[in-house]
Image (cartoon, rainbow, N blue to C red; front, side, top):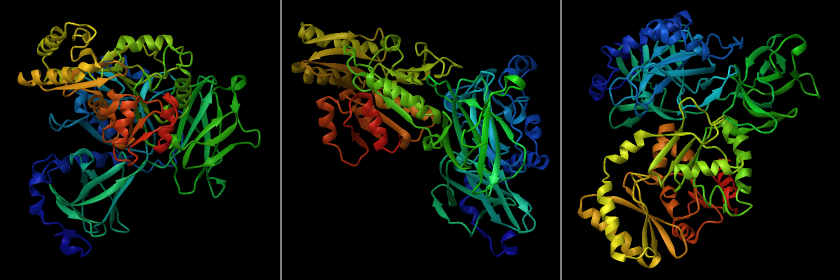
Length: 640
Protein backbone atom coordinates (compact mmCIF):
# COMPACT_ATOMS: atom_id res chain seq x y z
CA UNK A 1 0.00 0.00 0.00
CA UNK A 2 1.35 3.38 -1.02
CA UNK A 3 1.03 5.05 2.37
CA UNK A 4 3.12 2.36 4.02
CA UNK A 5 5.89 2.64 1.43
CA UNK A 6 6.30 6.40 1.73
CA UNK A 7 5.93 8.49 4.84
CA UNK A 8 5.67 11.59 2.63
CA UNK A 9 2.17 10.68 1.44
CA UNK A 10 -0.98 10.84 3.50
CA UNK A 11 -4.02 9.00 2.17
CA UNK A 12 -7.32 10.77 2.72
CA UNK A 13 -9.97 8.46 4.26
CA UNK A 14 -11.55 6.77 1.27
CA UNK A 15 -15.01 6.58 2.82
CA UNK A 16 -15.43 10.35 2.63
CA UNK A 17 -14.89 10.46 -1.13
CA UNK A 18 -16.22 7.08 -2.18
CA UNK A 19 -19.75 8.23 -3.00
CA UNK A 20 -18.60 11.19 -5.08
CA UNK A 21 -16.09 9.13 -7.04
CA UNK A 22 -18.38 6.19 -7.72
CA UNK A 23 -21.22 8.44 -8.88
CA UNK A 24 -19.10 10.36 -11.39
CA UNK A 25 -17.32 9.49 -14.64
CA UNK A 26 -13.94 9.70 -12.91
CA UNK A 27 -14.61 6.51 -10.95
CA UNK A 28 -11.33 4.99 -9.86
CA UNK A 29 -12.68 1.58 -10.77
CA UNK A 30 -13.17 2.20 -14.46
CA UNK A 31 -13.27 5.66 -15.97
CA UNK A 32 -9.92 7.09 -14.92
CA UNK A 33 -7.69 4.33 -16.31
CA UNK A 34 -9.52 4.27 -19.65
CA UNK A 35 -9.27 7.97 -20.24
CA UNK A 36 -5.70 8.30 -19.05
CA UNK A 37 -4.43 5.47 -21.27
CA UNK A 38 -5.37 7.44 -24.35
CA UNK A 39 -3.63 10.57 -23.14
CA UNK A 40 -0.60 8.57 -22.08
CA UNK A 41 -0.28 7.22 -25.59
CA UNK A 42 -0.25 10.77 -26.90
CA UNK A 43 2.58 11.74 -24.59
CA UNK A 44 4.58 8.64 -25.40
CA UNK A 45 4.69 9.25 -29.15
CA UNK A 46 4.82 13.06 -28.95
CA UNK A 47 2.08 13.44 -31.53
CA UNK A 48 -1.65 13.96 -31.71
CA UNK A 49 -2.25 10.92 -33.85
CA UNK A 50 -3.53 8.77 -30.99
CA UNK A 51 -6.54 10.84 -29.89
CA UNK A 52 -7.34 11.76 -33.46
CA UNK A 53 -7.45 8.16 -34.63
CA UNK A 54 -9.39 7.07 -31.58
CA UNK A 55 -12.24 9.50 -32.30
CA UNK A 56 -14.60 9.11 -35.19
CA UNK A 57 -14.32 11.90 -37.74
CA UNK A 58 -16.93 13.29 -40.09
CA UNK A 59 -17.74 11.68 -43.38
CA UNK A 60 -15.23 12.31 -46.15
CA UNK A 61 -17.73 14.37 -48.12
CA UNK A 62 -18.17 16.88 -45.32
CA UNK A 63 -14.44 17.04 -44.58
CA UNK A 64 -13.04 17.43 -48.07
CA UNK A 65 -15.21 20.40 -48.91
CA UNK A 66 -14.58 22.27 -45.70
CA UNK A 67 -11.43 21.44 -43.74
CA UNK A 68 -8.93 22.52 -46.35
CA UNK A 69 -10.24 26.07 -46.25
CA UNK A 70 -10.16 26.55 -42.47
CA UNK A 71 -6.49 26.51 -41.57
CA UNK A 72 -3.88 29.21 -41.81
CA UNK A 73 -0.41 28.82 -43.25
CA UNK A 74 1.63 26.84 -40.75
CA UNK A 75 4.80 28.89 -41.08
CA UNK A 76 5.99 28.76 -37.48
CA UNK A 77 9.12 26.63 -37.20
CA UNK A 78 9.84 27.29 -33.53
CA UNK A 79 10.57 23.94 -31.87
CA UNK A 80 12.02 25.38 -28.65
CA UNK A 81 9.24 23.88 -26.54
CA UNK A 82 8.73 20.77 -28.65
CA UNK A 83 9.16 18.40 -25.70
CA UNK A 84 6.72 20.23 -23.43
CA UNK A 85 3.06 19.24 -23.32
CA UNK A 86 0.22 21.12 -21.68
CA UNK A 87 -3.21 19.62 -21.01
CA UNK A 88 -5.77 21.87 -22.69
CA UNK A 89 -9.54 21.58 -22.34
CA UNK A 90 -11.93 22.47 -25.16
CA UNK A 91 -15.65 22.60 -24.49
CA UNK A 92 -18.91 23.20 -26.32
CA UNK A 93 -21.41 24.41 -23.68
CA UNK A 94 -24.72 22.66 -23.34
CA UNK A 95 -26.61 25.94 -23.86
CA UNK A 96 -25.16 26.19 -27.38
CA UNK A 97 -27.06 23.10 -28.48
CA UNK A 98 -25.99 20.31 -30.79
CA UNK A 99 -25.86 16.55 -30.39
CA UNK A 100 -22.51 15.60 -31.95
CA UNK A 101 -19.55 17.95 -31.58
CA UNK A 102 -16.05 17.70 -33.05
CA UNK A 103 -13.12 20.06 -32.89
CA UNK A 104 -10.75 20.60 -35.82
CA UNK A 105 -7.66 22.73 -35.71
CA UNK A 106 -4.08 23.56 -36.48
CA UNK A 107 -2.91 21.28 -33.65
CA UNK A 108 -2.97 18.41 -36.15
CA UNK A 109 -2.94 20.32 -39.42
CA UNK A 110 -6.73 20.25 -39.75
CA UNK A 111 -6.49 16.61 -40.82
CA UNK A 112 -8.90 14.95 -38.39
CA UNK A 113 -11.70 15.91 -36.08
CA UNK A 114 -11.55 15.07 -32.38
CA UNK A 115 -14.87 14.19 -30.79
CA UNK A 116 -16.04 16.03 -27.68
CA UNK A 117 -17.76 13.88 -25.07
CA UNK A 118 -20.85 14.78 -23.10
CA UNK A 119 -21.05 12.80 -19.86
CA UNK A 120 -24.72 13.61 -19.36
CA UNK A 121 -27.31 15.98 -20.75
CA UNK A 122 -26.43 18.41 -17.95
CA UNK A 123 -22.75 18.58 -18.92
CA UNK A 124 -20.91 20.48 -21.61
CA UNK A 125 -19.37 18.46 -24.42
CA UNK A 126 -15.63 18.52 -23.79
CA UNK A 127 -12.27 16.98 -24.51
CA UNK A 128 -8.81 17.39 -23.02
CA UNK A 129 -5.89 17.42 -25.46
CA UNK A 130 -2.19 17.57 -24.57
CA UNK A 131 -0.66 20.27 -26.76
CA UNK A 132 2.73 21.87 -27.14
CA UNK A 133 2.85 25.51 -25.98
CA UNK A 134 2.02 27.86 -28.84
CA UNK A 135 -0.76 29.39 -30.94
CA UNK A 136 -3.68 27.36 -32.21
CA UNK A 137 -6.57 28.08 -34.54
CA UNK A 138 -9.57 25.80 -34.40
CA UNK A 139 -13.22 25.44 -35.20
CA UNK A 140 -16.08 23.32 -33.95
CA UNK A 141 -18.23 21.09 -36.13
CA UNK A 142 -21.65 20.81 -34.52
CA UNK A 143 -24.00 18.32 -36.11
CA UNK A 144 -21.85 18.54 -39.29
CA UNK A 145 -21.97 22.35 -39.40
CA UNK A 146 -18.69 24.30 -39.13
CA UNK A 147 -18.95 26.95 -36.42
CA UNK A 148 -16.47 29.28 -34.76
CA UNK A 149 -17.55 29.45 -31.13
CA UNK A 150 -18.82 32.99 -30.41
CA UNK A 151 -17.98 32.52 -26.72
CA UNK A 152 -14.25 32.09 -27.46
CA UNK A 153 -11.79 34.60 -28.98
CA UNK A 154 -11.76 34.75 -32.78
CA UNK A 155 -9.22 35.89 -35.35
CA UNK A 156 -9.05 36.11 -39.13
CA UNK A 157 -6.02 34.32 -40.55
CA UNK A 158 -4.00 35.10 -43.67
CA UNK A 159 -6.36 32.99 -45.75
CA UNK A 160 -9.25 35.23 -44.61
CA UNK A 161 -10.84 32.45 -42.54
CA UNK A 162 -12.56 33.26 -39.28
CA UNK A 163 -11.41 30.80 -36.60
CA UNK A 164 -11.25 30.52 -32.85
CA UNK A 165 -7.83 31.24 -31.44
CA UNK A 166 -6.05 30.13 -28.30
CA UNK A 167 -2.54 30.60 -26.93
CA UNK A 168 -1.64 27.44 -25.05
CA UNK A 169 0.85 27.92 -22.23
CA UNK A 170 1.16 26.42 -18.74
CA UNK A 171 -1.03 28.25 -16.22
CA UNK A 172 -1.02 25.67 -13.42
CA UNK A 173 1.37 22.87 -12.36
CA UNK A 174 0.67 19.63 -10.51
CA UNK A 175 3.46 17.81 -8.63
CA UNK A 176 3.42 14.99 -6.11
CA UNK A 177 6.17 12.82 -4.64
CA UNK A 178 5.28 9.12 -5.08
CA UNK A 179 8.45 7.12 -5.85
CA UNK A 180 6.77 3.68 -5.53
CA UNK A 181 3.63 4.56 -7.51
CA UNK A 182 2.86 3.09 -10.92
CA UNK A 183 0.31 5.69 -12.03
CA UNK A 184 -0.73 9.11 -10.75
CA UNK A 185 -3.70 11.12 -12.00
CA UNK A 186 -5.20 14.44 -11.02
CA UNK A 187 -8.91 15.32 -11.25
CA UNK A 188 -10.56 18.63 -10.50
CA UNK A 189 -13.51 20.95 -10.77
CA UNK A 190 -12.25 22.72 -13.90
CA UNK A 191 -14.47 20.27 -15.81
CA UNK A 192 -16.74 19.14 -12.96
CA UNK A 193 -14.41 16.23 -12.10
CA UNK A 194 -14.87 14.56 -15.47
CA UNK A 195 -11.47 14.07 -17.10
CA UNK A 196 -8.40 12.72 -15.34
CA UNK A 197 -4.98 14.08 -16.24
CA UNK A 198 -2.05 11.69 -16.27
CA UNK A 199 1.13 12.85 -14.52
CA UNK A 200 4.55 11.87 -15.86
CA UNK A 201 7.11 10.32 -13.55
CA UNK A 202 10.68 11.51 -13.14
CA UNK A 203 12.52 8.34 -12.02
CA UNK A 204 15.47 10.37 -10.76
CA UNK A 205 13.43 12.31 -8.19
CA UNK A 206 10.33 10.19 -7.64
CA UNK A 207 8.05 13.11 -8.49
CA UNK A 208 5.06 12.88 -10.81
CA UNK A 209 4.12 16.11 -12.59
CA UNK A 210 2.08 17.68 -15.39
CA UNK A 211 1.05 21.12 -16.61
CA UNK A 212 -2.35 22.41 -17.69
CA UNK A 213 -3.78 25.46 -19.40
CA UNK A 214 -6.86 26.62 -17.47
CA UNK A 215 -8.82 29.84 -17.61
CA UNK A 216 -8.00 32.24 -14.75
CA UNK A 217 -9.61 31.26 -11.46
CA UNK A 218 -9.24 29.06 -8.39
CA UNK A 219 -9.60 25.30 -8.78
CA UNK A 220 -10.07 22.35 -6.44
CA UNK A 221 -8.43 19.01 -7.19
CA UNK A 222 -7.34 15.65 -5.83
CA UNK A 223 -4.64 13.18 -6.78
CA UNK A 224 -5.42 9.54 -7.56
CA UNK A 225 -2.36 7.38 -6.92
CA UNK A 226 -2.67 3.77 -8.10
CA UNK A 227 -6.47 3.98 -7.89
CA UNK A 228 -6.61 5.60 -4.45
CA UNK A 229 -7.52 9.20 -3.63
CA UNK A 230 -4.47 10.85 -2.11
CA UNK A 231 -3.79 14.25 -0.59
CA UNK A 232 -0.32 15.68 -1.01
CA UNK A 233 1.27 16.62 2.36
CA UNK A 234 3.38 19.23 0.55
CA UNK A 235 0.24 21.17 -0.43
CA UNK A 236 -2.37 22.99 1.60
CA UNK A 237 -5.57 21.02 2.25
CA UNK A 238 -9.02 22.60 2.43
CA UNK A 239 -12.43 21.08 3.09
CA UNK A 240 -15.02 20.70 0.32
CA UNK A 241 -18.60 19.92 1.34
CA UNK A 242 -19.02 17.30 -1.38
CA UNK A 243 -15.54 15.79 -1.69
CA UNK A 244 -13.96 16.27 1.69
CA UNK A 245 -10.29 17.20 1.61
CA UNK A 246 -9.09 18.89 -1.57
CA UNK A 247 -6.19 21.00 -2.72
CA UNK A 248 -6.88 24.45 -4.17
CA UNK A 249 -4.72 26.45 -6.53
CA UNK A 250 -5.04 29.58 -8.63
CA UNK A 251 -4.58 29.69 -12.40
CA UNK A 252 -3.56 33.01 -13.91
CA UNK A 253 -3.27 34.38 -17.42
CA UNK A 254 -0.26 32.87 -19.13
CA UNK A 255 2.87 35.01 -19.33
CA UNK A 256 3.65 35.48 -23.03
CA UNK A 257 5.17 37.90 -25.53
CA UNK A 258 2.39 39.43 -27.62
CA UNK A 259 2.83 41.92 -30.44
CA UNK A 260 0.13 43.99 -32.16
CA UNK A 261 1.19 45.55 -35.46
CA UNK A 262 -0.81 48.00 -37.58
CA UNK A 263 -0.18 47.52 -41.29
CA UNK A 264 -1.64 47.68 -44.77
CA UNK A 265 -0.02 44.38 -45.79
CA UNK A 266 -2.42 41.54 -46.57
CA UNK A 267 -0.01 39.01 -45.05
CA UNK A 268 2.42 39.75 -42.25
CA UNK A 269 5.17 37.50 -40.92
CA UNK A 270 6.96 37.90 -37.60
CA UNK A 271 10.64 36.90 -37.85
CA UNK A 272 12.01 36.42 -34.35
CA UNK A 273 14.60 34.72 -32.22
CA UNK A 274 14.98 34.30 -28.49
CA UNK A 275 17.66 35.99 -26.41
CA UNK A 276 19.06 34.77 -23.11
CA UNK A 277 21.42 37.12 -21.28
CA UNK A 278 21.34 39.34 -24.35
CA UNK A 279 22.59 36.59 -26.69
CA UNK A 280 20.54 34.77 -29.37
CA UNK A 281 19.81 31.13 -28.58
CA UNK A 282 20.06 30.33 -32.29
CA UNK A 283 21.35 32.00 -35.42
CA UNK A 284 18.28 31.50 -37.58
CA UNK A 285 15.00 33.35 -37.19
CA UNK A 286 11.77 31.59 -36.45
CA UNK A 287 8.78 32.63 -38.54
CA UNK A 288 5.18 33.10 -37.47
CA UNK A 289 2.30 34.17 -39.70
CA UNK A 290 0.43 36.93 -37.90
CA UNK A 291 -3.37 36.84 -37.65
CA UNK A 292 -5.81 39.72 -37.78
CA UNK A 293 -6.93 40.76 -34.31
CA UNK A 294 -10.64 41.17 -33.52
CA UNK A 295 -10.53 44.88 -34.37
CA UNK A 296 -11.85 46.85 -37.32
CA UNK A 297 -8.51 48.66 -37.49
CA UNK A 298 -7.97 52.33 -38.29
CA UNK A 299 -6.84 54.58 -41.15
CA UNK A 300 -3.36 53.05 -41.03
CA UNK A 301 -4.62 49.56 -41.81
CA UNK A 302 -5.40 46.33 -39.99
CA UNK A 303 -4.16 45.22 -36.61
CA UNK A 304 -2.14 42.00 -36.82
CA UNK A 305 -1.25 39.87 -33.81
CA UNK A 306 1.48 37.37 -32.95
CA UNK A 307 2.21 35.56 -29.70
CA UNK A 308 5.34 33.76 -28.54
CA UNK A 309 5.38 31.56 -25.43
CA UNK A 310 8.64 32.15 -23.53
CA UNK A 311 10.91 29.18 -22.92
CA UNK A 312 12.90 30.56 -19.98
CA UNK A 313 12.55 33.26 -17.36
CA UNK A 314 14.12 36.58 -18.34
CA UNK A 315 14.02 35.74 -22.02
CA UNK A 316 13.94 38.57 -24.59
CA UNK A 317 12.67 38.59 -28.16
CA UNK A 318 14.34 40.37 -31.08
CA UNK A 319 12.43 40.57 -34.32
CA UNK A 320 11.51 42.25 -37.56
CA UNK A 321 8.45 41.95 -39.81
CA UNK A 322 7.84 41.29 -43.48
CA UNK A 323 5.00 40.92 -45.94
CA UNK A 324 5.87 37.24 -46.40
CA UNK A 325 6.84 37.56 -50.05
CA UNK A 326 10.14 36.71 -51.74
CA UNK A 327 12.58 38.39 -54.09
CA UNK A 328 11.78 41.85 -55.41
CA UNK A 329 8.32 41.78 -53.84
CA UNK A 330 9.49 41.39 -50.24
CA UNK A 331 9.00 44.30 -47.86
CA UNK A 332 10.44 44.45 -44.38
CA UNK A 333 9.91 46.58 -41.30
CA UNK A 334 13.10 47.06 -39.27
CA UNK A 335 13.80 49.90 -36.85
CA UNK A 336 15.76 52.91 -38.01
CA UNK A 337 17.78 52.93 -34.80
CA UNK A 338 19.13 49.38 -35.19
CA UNK A 339 18.99 46.17 -37.14
CA UNK A 340 16.15 44.61 -35.12
CA UNK A 341 13.33 45.45 -32.74
CA UNK A 342 13.76 44.09 -29.22
CA UNK A 343 11.36 43.60 -26.29
CA UNK A 344 11.17 41.55 -23.09
CA UNK A 345 9.80 38.05 -23.64
CA UNK A 346 6.89 38.66 -21.25
CA UNK A 347 4.37 41.38 -21.97
CA UNK A 348 2.13 42.93 -24.59
CA UNK A 349 3.28 45.60 -27.04
CA UNK A 350 2.08 47.69 -29.95
CA UNK A 351 4.28 48.52 -32.93
CA UNK A 352 3.21 51.66 -34.81
CA UNK A 353 5.26 53.90 -37.08
CA UNK A 354 8.47 52.19 -36.05
CA UNK A 355 7.93 52.64 -32.32
CA UNK A 356 7.30 49.86 -29.78
CA UNK A 357 4.91 50.82 -26.97
CA UNK A 358 3.85 48.82 -23.91
CA UNK A 359 0.23 47.71 -24.20
CA UNK A 360 -0.76 45.89 -20.96
CA UNK A 361 -4.43 45.55 -21.96
CA UNK A 362 -3.40 43.15 -24.73
CA UNK A 363 -2.18 40.60 -22.19
CA UNK A 364 -5.11 40.91 -19.79
CA UNK A 365 -8.44 39.13 -19.71
CA UNK A 366 -11.09 40.38 -22.08
CA UNK A 367 -13.92 42.41 -20.63
CA UNK A 368 -17.56 42.75 -21.62
CA UNK A 369 -18.91 46.31 -21.75
CA UNK A 370 -22.70 46.49 -21.72
CA UNK A 371 -23.84 50.01 -22.58
CA UNK A 372 -27.12 51.77 -23.07
CA UNK A 373 -27.20 53.75 -26.33
CA UNK A 374 -29.27 56.93 -26.12
CA UNK A 375 -27.82 59.36 -23.58
CA UNK A 376 -24.96 56.98 -22.78
CA UNK A 377 -23.07 55.92 -25.90
CA UNK A 378 -24.44 58.81 -27.98
CA UNK A 379 -25.79 62.28 -27.28
CA UNK A 380 -28.95 63.96 -28.50
CA UNK A 381 -29.48 62.74 -32.07
CA UNK A 382 -30.86 66.17 -32.99
CA UNK A 383 -27.58 67.79 -32.02
CA UNK A 384 -24.64 68.15 -34.44
CA UNK A 385 -22.45 66.77 -31.65
CA UNK A 386 -24.52 63.62 -31.18
CA UNK A 387 -21.69 61.31 -32.21
CA UNK A 388 -18.67 63.32 -31.10
CA UNK A 389 -17.96 61.31 -27.95
CA UNK A 390 -18.99 57.99 -29.51
CA UNK A 391 -16.40 58.57 -32.25
CA UNK A 392 -13.71 58.96 -29.57
CA UNK A 393 -14.95 55.81 -27.91
CA UNK A 394 -14.86 53.95 -31.22
CA UNK A 395 -11.22 54.95 -31.74
CA UNK A 396 -10.33 53.72 -28.26
CA UNK A 397 -12.25 50.47 -28.58
CA UNK A 398 -10.80 49.42 -31.94
CA UNK A 399 -7.25 50.25 -30.90
CA UNK A 400 -7.35 48.86 -27.37
CA UNK A 401 -10.18 46.67 -26.04
CA UNK A 402 -10.96 44.98 -29.35
CA UNK A 403 -7.33 43.91 -29.64
CA UNK A 404 -7.71 42.03 -26.36
CA UNK A 405 -10.85 40.31 -27.66
CA UNK A 406 -13.20 42.30 -25.41
CA UNK A 407 -16.92 42.24 -26.13
CA UNK A 408 -19.17 45.23 -26.76
CA UNK A 409 -22.87 44.81 -26.04
CA UNK A 410 -25.58 47.43 -26.53
CA UNK A 411 -28.48 47.14 -24.08
CA UNK A 412 -31.19 49.48 -25.28
CA UNK A 413 -34.88 50.20 -25.16
CA UNK A 414 -34.78 50.66 -28.93
CA UNK A 415 -36.16 48.05 -31.30
CA UNK A 416 -33.77 46.31 -33.67
CA UNK A 417 -35.11 48.38 -36.56
CA UNK A 418 -34.41 51.61 -34.68
CA UNK A 419 -30.90 50.39 -33.85
CA UNK A 420 -30.17 49.48 -37.46
CA UNK A 421 -31.34 52.92 -38.60
CA UNK A 422 -28.93 54.47 -36.10
CA UNK A 423 -26.02 52.43 -37.49
CA UNK A 424 -26.93 53.54 -41.02
CA UNK A 425 -27.06 57.25 -40.28
CA UNK A 426 -24.23 57.61 -37.74
CA UNK A 427 -21.60 57.85 -40.50
CA UNK A 428 -19.45 55.16 -38.94
CA UNK A 429 -19.05 57.08 -35.66
CA UNK A 430 -20.66 54.45 -33.43
CA UNK A 431 -18.75 51.26 -32.63
CA UNK A 432 -20.23 48.06 -34.04
CA UNK A 433 -21.15 45.69 -31.17
CA UNK A 434 -20.83 41.95 -30.80
CA UNK A 435 -24.35 41.57 -29.37
CA UNK A 436 -27.43 43.79 -29.23
CA UNK A 437 -30.07 43.55 -26.49
CA UNK A 438 -33.23 45.42 -27.46
CA UNK A 439 -36.67 46.24 -26.12
CA UNK A 440 -35.54 46.58 -22.46
CA UNK A 441 -34.02 43.11 -22.31
CA UNK A 442 -36.67 41.09 -24.13
CA UNK A 443 -34.69 40.36 -27.30
CA UNK A 444 -31.06 39.31 -27.81
CA UNK A 445 -29.50 39.62 -31.24
CA UNK A 446 -26.26 38.12 -32.52
CA UNK A 447 -24.26 38.46 -35.69
CA UNK A 448 -24.97 35.98 -38.44
CA UNK A 449 -23.21 32.62 -38.05
CA UNK A 450 -19.65 32.88 -39.30
CA UNK A 451 -19.68 36.67 -39.18
CA UNK A 452 -17.34 38.84 -37.17
CA UNK A 453 -17.73 42.42 -35.99
CA UNK A 454 -14.40 43.14 -37.72
CA UNK A 455 -16.07 43.04 -41.13
CA UNK A 456 -19.84 43.28 -40.58
CA UNK A 457 -21.82 46.42 -41.40
CA UNK A 458 -23.76 46.12 -38.16
CA UNK A 459 -27.16 45.98 -39.87
CA UNK A 460 -27.70 42.21 -40.18
CA UNK A 461 -28.62 40.34 -37.00
CA UNK A 462 -30.16 37.03 -35.96
CA UNK A 463 -32.43 36.69 -32.94
CA UNK A 464 -31.31 34.39 -30.13
CA UNK A 465 -34.29 32.06 -30.05
CA UNK A 466 -33.09 30.30 -26.91
CA UNK A 467 -33.53 33.55 -24.97
CA UNK A 468 -36.98 33.99 -26.49
CA UNK A 469 -37.93 30.44 -25.48
CA UNK A 470 -36.89 31.13 -21.88
CA UNK A 471 -39.16 34.17 -21.74
CA UNK A 472 -42.06 32.19 -23.19
CA UNK A 473 -42.16 29.89 -20.16
CA UNK A 474 -43.79 32.37 -17.75
CA UNK A 475 -45.54 34.84 -20.00
CA UNK A 476 -49.11 35.28 -21.25
CA UNK A 477 -49.39 38.15 -23.69
CA UNK A 478 -53.19 37.92 -23.89
CA UNK A 479 -53.52 38.49 -20.14
CA UNK A 480 -51.16 41.46 -20.28
CA UNK A 481 -53.03 42.98 -23.22
CA UNK A 482 -56.36 42.73 -21.42
CA UNK A 483 -54.97 44.35 -18.29
CA UNK A 484 -53.37 47.18 -20.30
CA UNK A 485 -56.50 47.92 -22.31
CA UNK A 486 -58.55 47.95 -19.13
CA UNK A 487 -56.38 50.82 -17.88
CA UNK A 488 -56.55 52.65 -21.20
CA UNK A 489 -60.36 52.43 -21.18
CA UNK A 490 -60.36 53.62 -17.58
CA UNK A 491 -58.68 56.92 -18.48
CA UNK A 492 -60.24 57.35 -21.92
CA UNK A 493 -57.63 60.01 -22.62
CA UNK A 494 -54.51 59.30 -24.78
CA UNK A 495 -52.80 62.16 -22.95
CA UNK A 496 -53.04 60.24 -19.69
CA UNK A 497 -52.19 56.73 -20.90
CA UNK A 498 -51.63 55.21 -24.31
CA UNK A 499 -50.23 51.95 -25.65
CA UNK A 500 -47.05 52.22 -27.72
CA UNK A 501 -46.60 48.49 -28.38
CA UNK A 502 -49.22 45.90 -27.50
CA UNK A 503 -46.83 43.04 -28.08
CA UNK A 504 -47.25 42.98 -31.83
CA UNK A 505 -43.65 44.10 -32.41
CA UNK A 506 -42.10 42.55 -29.28
CA UNK A 507 -44.16 39.67 -27.96
CA UNK A 508 -42.53 39.81 -24.54
CA UNK A 509 -43.14 43.50 -23.93
CA UNK A 510 -46.18 45.71 -23.44
CA UNK A 511 -45.11 49.35 -23.75
CA UNK A 512 -47.17 52.33 -22.55
CA UNK A 513 -46.71 56.07 -22.26
CA UNK A 514 -48.23 57.43 -19.04
CA UNK A 515 -48.72 60.90 -17.55
CA UNK A 516 -46.71 61.24 -14.33
CA UNK A 517 -49.90 62.02 -12.39
CA UNK A 518 -51.29 58.58 -13.31
CA UNK A 519 -48.01 56.70 -13.04
CA UNK A 520 -48.49 55.17 -9.58
CA UNK A 521 -52.04 54.06 -10.35
CA UNK A 522 -51.11 52.53 -13.72
CA UNK A 523 -48.09 50.55 -12.47
CA UNK A 524 -49.87 49.35 -9.32
CA UNK A 525 -53.07 48.34 -11.11
CA UNK A 526 -51.18 46.57 -13.88
CA UNK A 527 -49.10 44.55 -11.44
CA UNK A 528 -52.01 43.72 -9.13
CA UNK A 529 -54.44 42.66 -11.84
CA UNK A 530 -51.90 40.31 -13.42
CA UNK A 531 -50.94 38.88 -10.03
CA UNK A 532 -54.59 37.95 -9.48
CA UNK A 533 -54.37 36.00 -12.73
CA UNK A 534 -51.30 34.18 -11.43
CA UNK A 535 -48.86 36.04 -13.67
CA UNK A 536 -45.85 37.77 -12.12
CA UNK A 537 -44.37 40.53 -14.28
CA UNK A 538 -41.64 43.13 -14.15
CA UNK A 539 -42.66 46.80 -14.48
CA UNK A 540 -39.92 49.11 -15.80
CA UNK A 541 -40.36 52.90 -15.70
CA UNK A 542 -38.09 55.30 -17.59
CA UNK A 543 -37.99 58.72 -19.19
CA UNK A 544 -38.36 62.26 -17.86
CA UNK A 545 -40.60 65.26 -18.31
CA UNK A 546 -44.40 65.16 -18.06
CA UNK A 547 -44.72 61.52 -19.18
CA UNK A 548 -42.98 58.22 -18.47
CA UNK A 549 -42.46 55.07 -20.47
CA UNK A 550 -43.89 52.00 -18.73
CA UNK A 551 -42.76 48.58 -19.94
CA UNK A 552 -44.39 45.37 -18.74
CA UNK A 553 -42.14 42.35 -19.36
CA UNK A 554 -41.71 38.79 -17.99
CA UNK A 555 -39.96 38.50 -14.63
CA UNK A 556 -37.18 36.64 -16.44
CA UNK A 557 -36.60 39.64 -18.74
CA UNK A 558 -35.12 43.08 -18.23
CA UNK A 559 -31.77 44.65 -18.95
CA UNK A 560 -29.90 42.90 -16.11
CA UNK A 561 -31.41 39.48 -16.81
CA UNK A 562 -30.46 39.73 -20.48
CA UNK A 563 -26.99 41.01 -19.54
CA UNK A 564 -26.42 37.98 -17.31
CA UNK A 565 -27.65 35.63 -20.02
CA UNK A 566 -25.16 37.04 -22.53
CA UNK A 567 -22.34 37.21 -19.97
CA UNK A 568 -22.71 33.53 -19.13
CA UNK A 569 -22.93 32.59 -22.79
CA UNK A 570 -19.54 34.21 -23.38
CA UNK A 571 -18.00 33.00 -20.13
CA UNK A 572 -17.08 36.47 -18.84
CA UNK A 573 -16.50 36.72 -15.06
CA UNK A 574 -18.70 39.15 -13.16
CA UNK A 575 -15.79 41.41 -12.22
CA UNK A 576 -14.89 41.85 -15.90
CA UNK A 577 -18.44 42.73 -16.97
CA UNK A 578 -19.20 46.48 -16.85
CA UNK A 579 -22.61 48.12 -17.30
CA UNK A 580 -23.05 51.78 -18.30
CA UNK A 581 -26.23 53.84 -18.32
CA UNK A 582 -27.86 57.24 -17.91
CA UNK A 583 -31.51 56.74 -16.97
CA UNK A 584 -33.96 54.97 -14.68
CA UNK A 585 -34.40 51.95 -16.92
CA UNK A 586 -30.68 51.25 -16.46
CA UNK A 587 -31.04 50.81 -12.69
CA UNK A 588 -31.64 47.07 -12.93
CA UNK A 589 -28.40 46.36 -14.78
CA UNK A 590 -26.45 48.78 -12.58
CA UNK A 591 -27.73 46.92 -9.50
CA UNK A 592 -26.10 43.72 -10.72
CA UNK A 593 -23.13 42.13 -8.99
CA UNK A 594 -20.61 43.67 -11.39
CA UNK A 595 -19.00 47.09 -11.93
CA UNK A 596 -21.19 49.92 -13.18
CA UNK A 597 -20.81 53.37 -14.71
CA UNK A 598 -23.24 56.28 -14.51
CA UNK A 599 -22.27 58.86 -17.12
CA UNK A 600 -21.98 62.53 -16.16
CA UNK A 601 -25.12 63.59 -18.04
CA UNK A 602 -27.33 61.04 -16.24
CA UNK A 603 -30.97 61.89 -15.58
CA UNK A 604 -31.90 63.07 -12.10
CA UNK A 605 -33.77 59.87 -11.16
CA UNK A 606 -30.66 57.77 -11.77
CA UNK A 607 -28.43 60.20 -9.85
CA UNK A 608 -30.87 60.12 -6.93
CA UNK A 609 -30.79 56.32 -7.01
CA UNK A 610 -26.98 56.30 -6.99
CA UNK A 611 -26.74 58.66 -4.00
CA UNK A 612 -28.85 56.21 -1.97
CA UNK A 613 -26.51 53.27 -2.73
CA UNK A 614 -23.48 52.22 -0.66
CA UNK A 615 -20.57 54.34 -1.83
CA UNK A 616 -18.24 51.36 -2.22
CA UNK A 617 -17.03 52.07 -5.75
CA UNK A 618 -19.00 49.28 -7.41
CA UNK A 619 -20.87 51.91 -9.43
CA UNK A 620 -18.97 55.09 -10.26
CA UNK A 621 -20.39 58.44 -11.33
CA UNK A 622 -18.33 59.92 -14.15
CA UNK A 623 -17.82 63.64 -14.65
CA UNK A 624 -17.59 63.33 -18.44
CA UNK A 625 -20.73 63.12 -20.57
CA UNK A 626 -21.92 60.31 -22.85
CA UNK A 627 -19.25 57.92 -24.20
CA UNK A 628 -16.47 60.02 -22.67
CA UNK A 629 -18.03 59.12 -19.34
CA UNK A 630 -17.82 55.43 -20.24
CA UNK A 631 -14.09 55.80 -20.89
CA UNK A 632 -13.64 57.62 -17.60
CA UNK A 633 -15.56 54.89 -15.80
CA UNK A 634 -13.46 52.11 -17.33
CA UNK A 635 -10.32 53.89 -16.16
CA UNK A 636 -11.68 54.31 -12.63
CA UNK A 637 -12.53 50.61 -12.53
CA UNK A 638 -8.96 49.83 -13.67
CA UNK A 639 -10.31 48.20 -16.83
CA UNK A 640 -9.14 50.82 -19.31
